[in-house]
Length: 468
Length: 101
Ligand code: SF4
Image 1 (cartoon, helix red, strand yellow):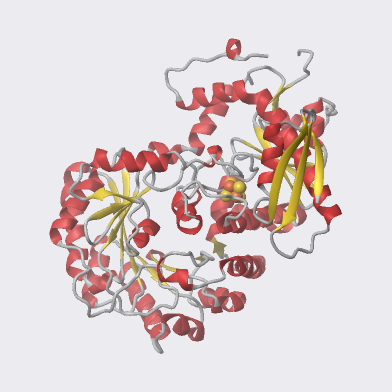
Image 2: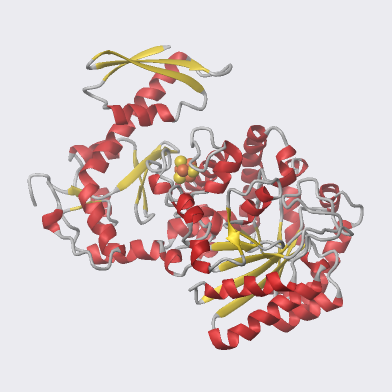
């Protein structure tokens, strides 16, 4: 031991529920009495259990380089493992045509009968070739729209191409169809069954709410029928649903959760509206964000109650954050990554041949904003992912290096989002003091930590079951 | 409201970081009274429930927190480089000698 008694290791801290919450670079968290950091820095910490815990969990070290530095490095590597595996999610926007009329549509959909706005075979061929240039051993080919089930030919063609190329490439490949389930024809279901396609449908809650959001009278019935047919075709576990919280939906947290339980789902993602596409017409985003945080907590409390009564039901946003908090692993969820999920984890092939760095960035393009267009399917893979545009985005994609985020104790659980910064604040760098995404993420992550602090014995068995 | 901050206690980086989080809700004007004293004038952008005393307490707390963060960052700069190099830079072999005490 030296005159310093011990050495500090990098960590940050914040105050939650009257406690000082310390988080290190590995995402490990220690909950301690207020004033602990001052004592750590002053070297006035008594050598009690807290001290031992700080040493054991890499917050301080009794040697200048911690004896388990190799393990620290391995854990650090694991937390950023998603970078090693490269782009795994490849989104194919097959068409902008759609058969619904959602009040919050984020994809600038076109009328079902409209011409054009659909991917050509040639664009599909070039896109699939680019997808296979990704070094990732495991790739997900996700089909989106508009409504992709309106164009079964190009959907099937894309999968057939991927299957053919994969005979030599031998990657692990998953297919996901994002559909509103209104037009799941026998042909679509046969394709899904044949290739084990996961069906991800959209369902906003009970009939009155879902139909109001979709601008149709019978949407709910048809979605529920579609879910049932999808389950028969590909199996229960391969059909999931995704909700979007419309302004009206904010009033029904309990009803929305109950609807998912009623339909036999075991998980849901409480998802806020995002300010892309037509959704930008919702004017008061600040008020929406505050109301969404309140909505989230009410729905989450209800989910906790269900779990306590024996119904296993997961809130997926929380599960992602908790996995970062309670396990040594990275999550691969593109919206909560640093470096950001754009390019690193996701690429978009648009119906018109444009290649984008995230789903949201192709939506900006529908408003003639091509800031995040990396190039086209005619370009070389290297020029797309290492090009000038990609480098520009890379300057601002790590929250470890962004004002506000770099000193934030929650950064290990949060992520960077240059596209959201740009679309809501006018520049990719963004300002955390006024960012509504920051406000939402911070509020939810702090809420989860406050539950761990205040209701540890009640919530931890549930949280552990979600992350194991 | 104007607050006087002693720059021998809180350096420029600490003051900037603390004020950053107020910049969404307040207009902030910084000026140097002399080499060691900074005056910060804070004006709310819109009507607020937060009293001046509360705001001052919050700001002083934030300054102290950022000062602690600064100490942690300064003391851990080298070890952080070593740990990250071990994790991600395959050919870097940094060790105890690379830490400037
Ligand atoms: S976005 Fe906000 S909550 Fe997330 S790391 Fe940055 S400052 Fe923290």
